[in-house]
Image 1 (cartoon, rainbow, N blue to C red):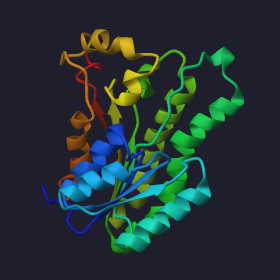
Image 2 (cartoon, one colour):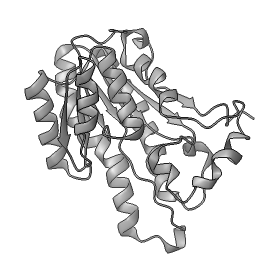
Image 3 (cartoon, rainbow, N blue to C red):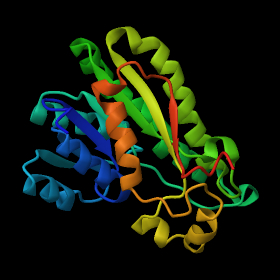
Length: 247
């Protein structure tokens, strides 16, 4: 713990679920945390402050370039910049391709992938000036497996990996690493109430580790990538799926 003392992290989608777990762990590691979410992050901020951490919640629509820029400014004004970006926000509607409108396609790509462009534009200059930075995007195992009714989602998550690999080759010399984490099927309040909520048990039986993943399974890899322990790791994708992809 305390590997990130003095650092500031922005966590998108940090109010609930996986993002909340990320925010709490980063604070436990000593980082100041800016929770960027369209949902109210006040409860996560309170949980962090109860254990002596520093956090601020900023309402932010990830499809809006202006709101992303404003959110990054709040984080900078509050904590003095951004050292760590964890882009966790995303949506995953279920729609057959032939029934999918271009408007729905664009909305998913805007929120899941275009936002990565705007976020990185907002934080990269500060990271480069400091000679240190960590950029982590949350992708998905669907980037190589594919899944029916999620063409837009799979495309957006594959795009994050391509983005990270290319950007990593540009910014490594400035002490900045860029990586992705690809979770499997993770149990959260959102997935429990979604159209695939009846698949947890059957999916777990397809994994080497026969249980359903939870947000806390992802915080260790994220904290590792955010720290100096991963200073020589960049352009990589870590699969956290209970061994689903290799059996």
